[in-house]
Length: 310
Length: 253
Image (cartoon, rainbow over all chains, first blue to last red; front, side, top):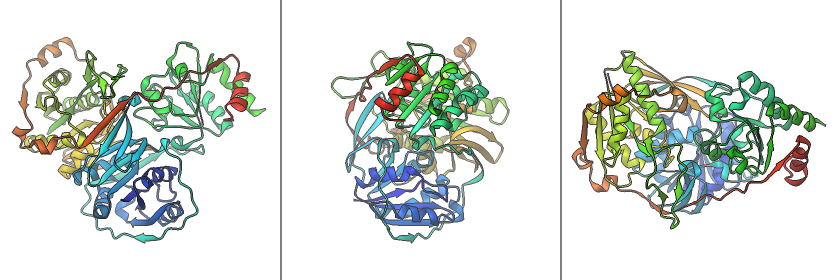
């Protein structure tokens, strides 16, 4: 079975999502990686080093610069007849594009795969992760998005050939206006080793920043937030961890002032070690925490920062 | 201008579902059902567009059993004008089948804009809007946190992994909603009463020209299991103890 994996990147750097999605894709068979973008030759070169890749296909075109779903789907569809599998990481880019591809191919997509049992059988969470479904997909082309937090990254050291794909896009249906992306020196949330998250108990954007960020920087951690904190404006939307935000599985997840609604747990309960800090000892977050500290986060986080420094 | 909004009847978001012991699915008997929260946001957005004078008519469509009429009434009480129920009885309809049904309804109704929730909180697929957009060959603006509509185009600010992305779509177009697009209103009692009298058309997939083969499930559900349970750990009393455990017991610092 020949599989096409769609690379996750920003035209400069290949995201860690791709190496993880590759691990899932190789369980379906031989894998080619498709890089869609503009001036993204460097990304193709990075993809070519991933262990297990047959060929890297580079679709470089001004119309693909922002990886909008319509043109990306068009290029993927032009290549689809060569493949029995089309895979992408379940990022906002993958989720945006792949169903468009699946519908045009008249196949049903399998979303958010957490385990590949064989080339047509997959496990995926439903009901915010409260149940795990095993589905068999007998479609002639398996179109799959992969929850990368559940897969180890493939190794590097290979040197697959890179070959250019000709791109002939039809008239654009949508136009990119602007990106307002968060600029951060901290690790990316979805692939970080350590995450510290804040909830509504932080009380304000200023307090969120004063209390959470110093500890994050001391730990070299990414910063997350509960939906309640994001809705209240304490943290930007791209920090949200949960059913409808980002799904993470770091080595260490520190939940501060987060009660632990099922929608939040759905996004972080696969973390290796979970720490919960909350004043309410009955908060559901303690039911999944390896280490619970019933305390006021405003008192203990500065103390934690201090102790980490010593 | 006409807006079509798709709404799905799902398990209420506050309910923690139970997996059946025999692995055949989740137990939905006597479970509270509600409108999918993302679809409620979609209805609210459409009604606000109407209140702003940009839209003349808001039409709701729901696909499912006859009970989905309740979901339509919920949206009608929020201010939508009329509903369409496509009755699929107890057949499991996957996103691809729903997109095909919505395609037929869209062709029939000719809206300038279709708004859907970005995902349903039961199957968590996040596919239908993108699939409908593909089948119609329309542009798509998914995961919207802001929608600005004018006569010929819609500007959509999208919640993406790195922050926000703004795209401009020529109409007709498909938009899917994210959580922060708006806060849906509570329907007032008079509006709930009024909604009971609003028209709801009842159709079948066959009446829309779709055969059984068009909408039958493609995926075979082998089994449904409980997720692996996490054991609750221990409580620590001091920060020093926490740091010590993380360093020496868990080995993650």
